[in-house]
Amino acid sequence: MRPTRYILTALIILFSANAFSQANYTRITNYKVFYGWAHLYPQDWMVLRSFENGNRPYYLMVNPQTLQTKVTEAGFYQVKPLSVEQARKLFANTAYVNALQSAEKHSVTIQDAGIERGLPEETGISLTADLCPSHRPLDRRIFVDIIKGFRTVEQPVPVALSVSGLWMLHHMADLNWLKDLQAKRQIYITWVNHSYNHRVSATAPLKTNFLLEPGTNINTEVLETEKLMLANGLLPSVFFRFPGLVSDQQLVYKITGFGLIPIGTDAWLAKGQQPQAGSIVLIHGNGNEPVGVNDFINLLKQKAPSIAKKQWLLYDLRETVEEDADVKR
Image 1: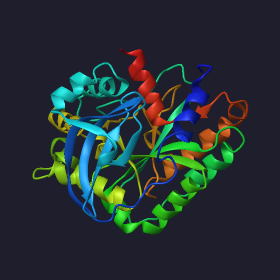
Image 2: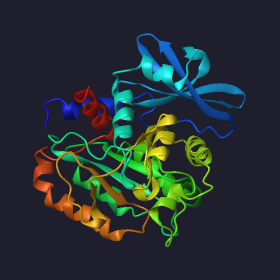
Image 3: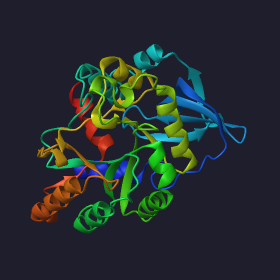
């Protein structure tokens, strides 16, 4: 592990503007994709969305060096509207734009397009848990066990949760429980867009399944999920996970057109894929995949001696992707 790795991850979490609290924007109107340059000394930000809440204008923006997002009132920044092409050119060679381009280079495959892993020299993994629509409750064992397992070496424990709109609507108690863990600084959540409806057919081929289903409104799937996140006090990240990990090249470019970085996996535990150093691990936390959760819990037990020595850690997804993009410049 790089000597500064753990420190950098901690700093990203501790000094993020909205690290542990986020306002609830419950009266959102005119929510839209809006690219721009925002400046407030000493940092330049890239604007991704504009909206109004209670007739007050806001921006959702990203720090192009760290991939950290934040929501701010429009009047605080000097803002210049840009086209997507102009924005990418202005912020060329930043970690954020490099990550978008890296995801686009891996857009051809029907499954698992996008960024699949971080740096191979990492002694640990980035944990991602998908929250697809489900009638079952949240599998809370994941969070109880990572808090317990990393209590003395890594707190808060970083985890990325890919959340669908319908899961949020029907699991408010579970969502509030997760928010409470974050408020208590036991975990730090990177909220990943996982589409709104997450439709799936048991019989349709992949090329017409999930978000590739004919008639899918990708604007609704992306933007309505973000609006629901903001209404519930969640801070949208710049990451997107395709339902079923299914996409085609055209869909990947639609998602990157929203300014979102598709995240895949090289270690879907329930499918028997074993994590390596730097893996982006996938489990499902929605109660539908206990096998994957059990495998992850067993992995924690196996790695307990290394965890105690800080030789195997969980990494913030943003920092993993950011550093990987820097290396590939």
